[in-house]
Amino acid sequence: MKTPYDVILEPVLSEKAYGGYAEGKYTFWVHPDATKTEIKNAVEAAFKVNVVQVNVMNVRGKKKRLGRFEGKRPDRKKAIVKVAPGQKIEALEGLI
Image (tube, rainbow, N blue to C red; front, side):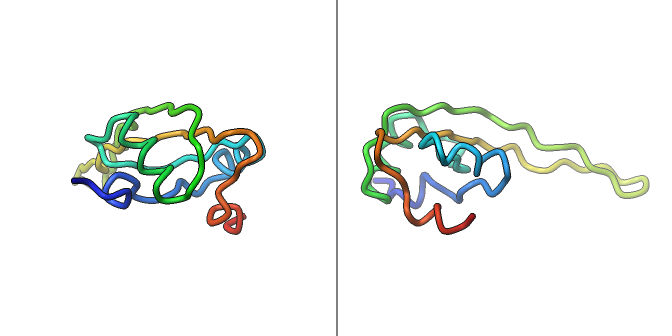
């Protein structure tokens, strides 16, 4: 069985992600094989909040090169989770 910490890898730390906190939207990098239901259950178990909506997107890794050598960053999956009105994730609110 997957623990919440196997599904949720880390929060996304960006200005756009911080802007969603006022609306109750929190953004996380999640495991590439995670489903919306698994993400919802993991956030509810880890942070003790009620999740209303989960949006998921696959983010392709950027192509990078150093001189004549080409490489690619790994592909990742991002989830935007909306919590119930009046609730918030205190652990992430302190990061601002």
